[in-house]
Length: 171
Length: 302
Image 1 (spheres, rainbow over the protein chains, first blue to last red):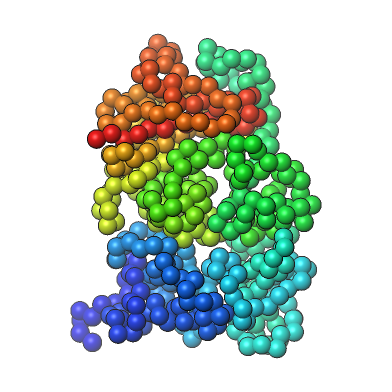
Image 2 (image 1 turned 90 degrees about the horizontal axis):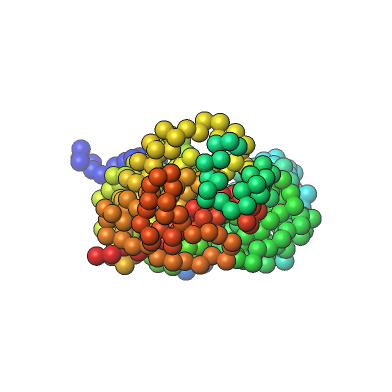
């Protein structure tokens, strides 16, 4: 690596490279990897993200934008914070799962109303689950359909609630 | 309340106006159509046992019989957002369409930004700017909670906003919902007028003029700019429009919002304004049981 090798700059939004062959910044996720991750983990069809672009600002913080703008872009925020990469297990945001998780068909855990209440209060709870451990889409039944509450983390026979403080509610 | 006495020559049934200003506001929310249809949001409120009343002028505005609309499943999911009824007017008047580029010049905390995005079906681009970095965190929180993905958030003084970071050189539309003396929000916050002074009105009017002027410049020929405040002061309303008409290539156009309103005024306190400011609309608290509001629609000319 030379001194001039491009690095991640926390002050600006850079569009993710389409594929690994297009990658210039070391460790940066590609669009292909991001879309495949949602497909493999939650069976959310890749077509869901047609018309969206993905961006990195901050270390491993991936943002999703409907449409496209010029890259790089030095502004405060772009679209929605979507996914955390550059760590062993990629982690989707609560807001991204609420927005796109309706399409999920694997690693979806359905909660009763009482379990949903505990989840949105930010509480961990023991719930049986015979699927994979890791990040799950937590859903409940509301107004005639299944609606994602956010992302849950299932480990050691326990569903943990990573709902951020500011999004937690006592319902 | 005596600070409102200066508007007696403008407001018919002035006693009813003063009475309304002393009553609390109804609890009103907007349905966020990015995440739910009005029907589904209403069904979720029904499941929570919260009564709602619709509004004839908009499918997405609902009055709820709770003081705490945030404590509902519909709110947790971002299907509804607490927003005063008159505050939903300017985005409807701007009527942005899917795929357009829209500038929200004074965007925080984001009720109108998210409404613009919803009207555009979350497609196109909303550039949401605010000069106050602290308030931007509320804006970012709200756009993400409501599932908005077509917004770029910038932090600058709108009076000299630069399009340089972007790959286009004009907006199709702009919403200029300026900081103001907030007289119209007295029903929500009864202490609003405690710090009112004519000097403050004059100084903030200067800021408003600068922002509206820049918005007209940054909007393409034939594009639309909507100017709004939540105040009654003609110095911050008609006088600012009068200045924009004088200094920039633009004209006022009529618009129709099926709420009771009065035309903009052409004379106040010894000043007179361009005749066409009558095309602006004044919304008074006693007419629709809302806060007070002012809204004008401009077309940018070549």
